[in-house]
Length: 176
Ligand code: SAM
Image (spheres, rainbow, N blue to C red):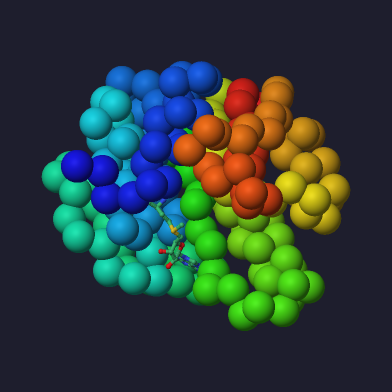
């Protein structure tokens, strides 16, 4: 079975946009407990390299490491493990909320920015970036950078994402 509710969100986004191709080489940021990695492997990815602060139970065919993605050198470690540039960078990273709205908001934006910068630096031309995001987030700067680096940036609210949550997903396709 799928290890997370998040797996259903990714499947829905992929059903709509066809992001995971047979042979895709995928990076999964914030991979625990492994739902998105399972979906990517099941849908024909040739390789998935995932990272999380928490250990992730093995997924056949995938490489999963326990590390802080924001720590120096972890980005390069992921690319080395993948053996080259990815076709698809996924980020479902979320920190433990502290309950202070403004602080939580800033932390979310930092994770999105770090993931977006990684995707822009490492993706193969034509590649795709998917990240968890939030409606009403102050994302002007990162949206601008994504729009400049990709052909198209879409905001998607999957049906599997709770209606009363501000969660949405940014999908950037056609890396230039
Ligand atoms: N997509 C996953 C799935 O389908 O199983 C669910 C991911 S969960 C919503 C968010 C994850 O992001 C948590 O497991 C958390 O530990 C991880 N995370 C948050 N900050 C991180 C960081 N700096 N580096 C690595 N993982 C991080």
